[in-house]
Image 1 (spheres, rainbow, N blue to C red):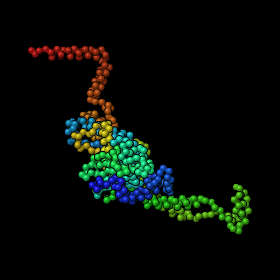
Image 2 (image 1 turned 90 degrees about the vertical axis):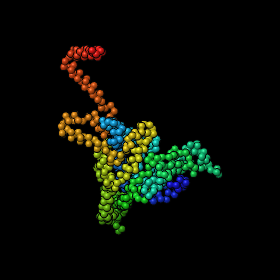
Image 3 (image 1 turned 30 degrees about the horizontal axis):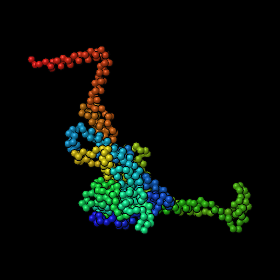
Length: 528
């Protein structure tokens, strides 16, 4: 780290680019067999025409698997994380057991607020592209700033260096922006738009952003450079270790390597064979579909007469003088087709195309999400757990910090020192809380019915906890004890008025007023 502090951002980028090159080659090869524009070669633009793959299974599987990763890691209809509070810390803060529901309600509201901020930052479209990059290239740099939209950097625009324990040491990001878009103070630092000879400089300029861990390991230092000159960029400064807005994501963890490997890289052989076999079958089918007639050399049939003959016309000749050209490759094609079917079946299982574990639609249950997450974690070798640790957890923290920075919510109470964010499969824990609550009420009903429930269960607290487990805003929905008592009193008065009549109610009211006057006079008289 001390060595990288003295080196410029450009020099560090060029030095680390050598280690990155093999991963770039694999990423481009994976893109050629799936979605070519997902990771193009250097020098391409929007006008570049890519070579199309000979099959669509790779592209379909990539999109399908990326969609499943997104719906399991970031569900549409539920928070992907939850705040948990230790019972001892909660008791010391509230000093009352019946306030637990209020705390759960407040934390649930905070979770929904985080999701709202994420949606406003266009996180879901960017995250889908991140998953496609992770599946294809194995790496992607996610940037979650304190304000503005989320961004995703492809592997060819940044380099990473880690230590032996896979801890992040350095990140250098290379971006190209228009020189005219730079502020005046930065242009004054880097010079005019012309060089020393008076020739105009390029319209675009390279901007390097270097993120380096400090010597003591307590923070990250971020600097930005243009043409070797350090500038006061928007993101320059110092960041705590757990609040770094740049997340260098990996699809798989490999000991001793700075970068991860993509999912496509593990099935590159089958995809390559499928692509070649599909190309061969396609070309053979096109040739077999071509109709060519062979005319015997000594035949009396003239080819030009036969070609000009109309439908149903008569042409003089022998039956065997004209025959179609046959490839006679049915047996060879059948062998290739069987191999294509086997490879397609293997890849379909790899991309989870054969599993109907989630119905169509946006509203899916927590059990379906849990099933998807479990299959992803089992079928993809712990990938879900790695992404939950390196992506879900930091994203939840960063968006929570963004809300505090924008003063949309206050910071969490310092008294609750054990407050944490649970992500991954455990993030669906509120669904488990709901099941446990229902099981408790069902058990009480079996023991003594509604009488036991009414005697021992605080229904108001039960509704608060149930609403928090369901993620429902309970504000103003459940009546307070005072509102319930007032409603009961009004119902009793209405029933009494119906039974006794309005005159009896008026007489009882006069008697009540007279009793109050007598009590006041009695209390005001001096003792004996």
